[in-house]
Length: 354
Length: 247
Image (cartoon, rainbow over all chains, first blue to last red; front, side, top):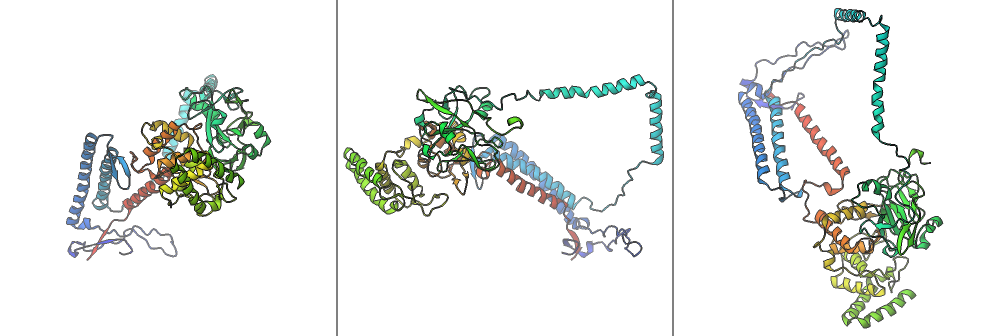
């Protein structure tokens, strides 16, 4: 190794007799401290002066291209030969699809070998002579500039745009109005939300249906320390707008010993200790249900907002700005149902929420 | 003590007369094991102390889960009691469970038929898992963090019986999912789903699953190793080639 990088030993008789010196270089002096030193002396690669090394490089490049060809053939062969459901165990990937693995490996090899061959070709065989190419000035020549200005003035005169004011003014009018059509199309961004942000499908008398079993919930289904997810009766998973509606209606039900409920209002809205809270975080609307049954805390996985379900859904940590909305529930004919809708908008805050 | 004592005195007495002698023998043996391994925290009658909750009514399933996964007896107090090597034999766990079950009615240890994947709907199980479990245990049951040092443990390598019992009893801070919340068939489906995505033989057709933690870890891997490899190749392409020199 030297200060100019890695060197490869070659027999002396194949080296050029005289090393080229730096060309067009100048040495910095007191009068001209920023003199251009020019390019460093060119150094030859082994392949430039040793034909055997050059042939070795040629064979390497050709070998890479041949490997690429074989890999492409192997890609087609594996596509034809390997059944799609076959699995293999490959360390450290685990049990994976044999077809995916073979296709990925062969196509990867085919593309990589083309690239590697091209790079090796460029680095060892293509010319590596440094060439200096001066930049052209960006500014056009003065006579070109003068011609352009003259052409413009003549065009303006011949079009009579200064004289025929009617044409000029109507043209400006037309050009000013045409973008309005684009502005009007912005209306297609959708109808305004109306009261959708404030209302859900919960209203007085709607039964709570277990989201997992699809059966109406009875108070005895909900044990102390359990967690159950509920949807409003009548909302089915194959409804066209199910995803849109459950995004607001999702409810989590937990049962807390009534003496452990700290908030009096929460207690009055519960049924025998069963409390129903919106499952949608009041920060940015992630579904939250990381419920810890001993602390009654609910954690949002997105930004770690934490709510206390034994204290009116109060925010005890994190960026959420509002307590979790509680649904007033009651029992009728042995089933749980809503005693009213949500009294405040569920989910994240919005401008006009108040 | 008085409540636990009353339970210990009356409840098993009724049971012992109705059951065969093998059962009452198991309760007796279990009581001895309980006195040695559990009573210091849960009280001599399982009534609970300031160091451990009452075990009246937790049922045999809770004992089988807690002792079978090595969580109980707990080594030390902390945010959460971790899973560790189980020190009891199956017969001893059954005896302990019989004793605790005799303190008050609770969930029983499930039968093999209840948690075997036969007759389960794996697709429905995935849906149920994502609705009820994935918020804490992650999409394929790899676990995740909770508050104040608590965490939802990974479900990898957990006996299906213990998963069933955990759903039924709600150990530590996990809420329980009784039959009113998740039906027996729901639980079976969930266990079959976990077996399909998180078992020793579960398949990952796309290749390396990077822990199955979701898009954040996959993106991070792509940025660090994918971009890192591209930068390394770019440096190699532009590097100075080997020069000839006199030998």
